[in-house]
Length: 372
Image (cartoon, rainbow, N blue to C red; front, side, top):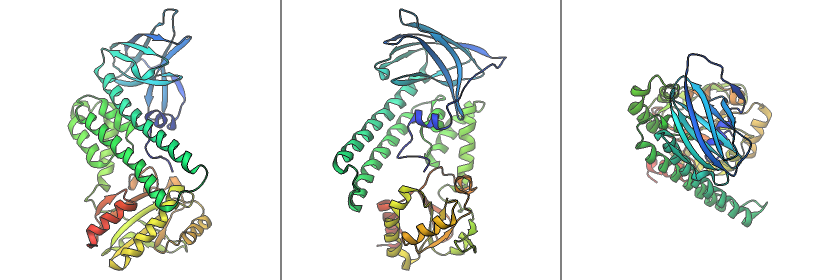
């Protein structure tokens, strides 16, 4: 599973790579970051945040009075990071900007930035994320104290999952409310690095609102291309065909299930959350199958034997297919997902009516469709 309950900003950056390279490009203008840092000695540096890692822009010594100065060159308005042992500061620098920063290395969240509206907008988003992170950690500690190494009952697992999901949903709501008020480049930062699982309607709204005025920005281009790709699997779109072999080597097509309400369930034998969710999926399948509900399990396995063993062990009696390519399957791009379990619900005509449903949410949707 590539993503956990929700992806924290910095961890998502590091997941893309943590290589640091010095930018020796030419024909660029300069920026300056001056500041004072308390409770820190030695050196300090600033790095550009990219989708493939961190790119060193400049480094400097912290003087005896805590002052420092960082200079660098960029081709356009760029997101960068000052990394410190107890936290990170995200800034926006332009081709010709002068930013002043005050930092306490022992209390990173209270840093101040002058002369950069975007940097302060990012600070707001980071604060929202930080509060949710604290709630998740508190919940983890709470249940670790209760259960230790013991497995909670299925009912308790549902309760725990719902509590975590509630934190995630609230975090997403707060981020969206804040982002909606921003008319600068920061929403592109949020969608690139903070909200990898955001739904199409939200991303499409940002793209329509801000792309025209920022279309030369590399960050805007990333979001715009993402929106174009997601449109193929947006709510109301025809589900792309899936035609793969079943466990016995016989080809099976999603289109053969036309006339039924179908859930495409992307999963794998090695995916712990998928396996834990399977009993719930079995119960829902048994409840609604006779009413016209079916499931197509699409496995991201790369080992046929383990795939079949998991199907049998979990009593998954619906249709199954796989190309056994794991994360190399083209379906990742076709269906625009980066983590499993991932579900896509389609109607009798093959149109997508919902995504990412599981547990109570899935059952509620089927109750709405079938009337009980």
